[in-house]
Image (cartoon, rainbow, N blue to C red; front, side, top):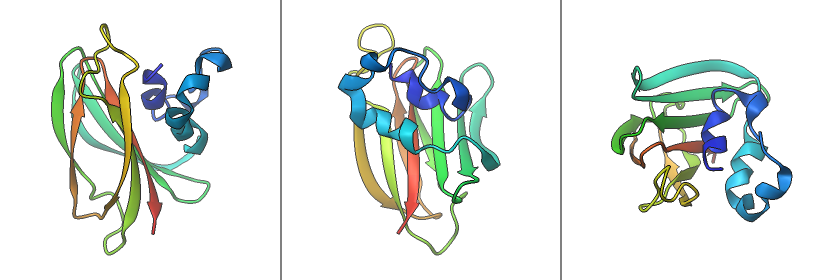
Length: 142
């Protein structure tokens, strides 16, 4: 289930709350769950509207790697997510796990896309979220 990606940023112990065979067809998306840390140095709430959406960035204790995730209610929305939590002057490869254009929590809950792009602390990512959807991003310093 696509929501497992977003749950990892909020409740790491519930990351894969389903039978392993249900994830086998989505191993590309499951990579985020394999990569994400479970202990955090810090958390930053980047955007939020109670009861509607939240975007959080967290820095892992293991190696200082950053992760970011957002989730929305039953309203489709686009948010401009600032990358200002990243260290200025450095470039990061962001691996982005996001809702596909036709994703919808009722009609097409497993539609997602994954891409990579370079980002810096000065960037703002425009993230589209389907109804009941969201996104997850992992960052590796280049």
